[in-house]
Length: 298
Image 1: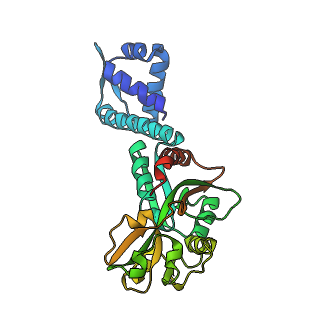
Image 2: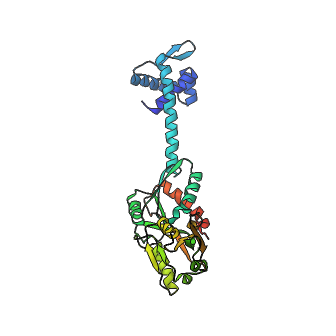
Image 3: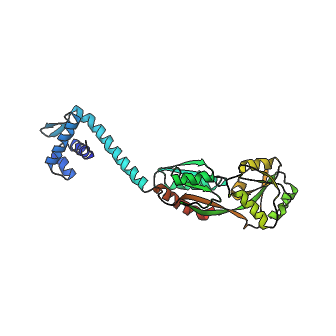
């Protein structure tokens, strides 16, 4: 059974005769007749009865007509979906993230991507930077967001924006923090660093900022992530530095103050496989490029 035969069968059924159907299909009548006969042999049942005015569907033909129309509609849908997938407009995009980009960058990307490609879906999951790079190279995931990725052969990294830094402290403010305008003002303030491990990291950047200013940070604790850091901050263990996207979220018991100068910032990066990536990844990168200007935050 061929798709062509299904089309011919539906044409004859709708036209009520072989001659009219042949004209509509732009073929001569003998080949059309032979194709219908071959279809009847494959099915094992007669589909048409000849009448004085043309042909009529048999009982088997009436049943088969419904199925034939559904099969042809399915073929059309499948064709459109395949073409859309080839253009990168449908399918599932597997996105992973690590750290604070989940607060603003990831939602902004997903929202814009799905608005641009409504037939696509996005699977979002948390993954360490090391695991992201391995998964990108093996084709398990498509795109990743984070900060301070190490140079990795076969993986490209885009710096898609920057975020200024804020100091977070328990509310009410520690008087030492309330007067802080620069990192040198935090010399005597215990600091909570994150994340622990997975170098290079945001923690390394914070330490380097202090050392650039000629001071050594007073480290109270190193924790797994920003959520833990802010929990300890609210408990009064110390203060922590966070990107602007975190400071935009309301955290119970914590207040944020932007540090000066505003040149103190951290990057937001997007990583993806350099080659042999699917069309949907290229579509995702177009969305990333369109959002890049709006991802520099203060």
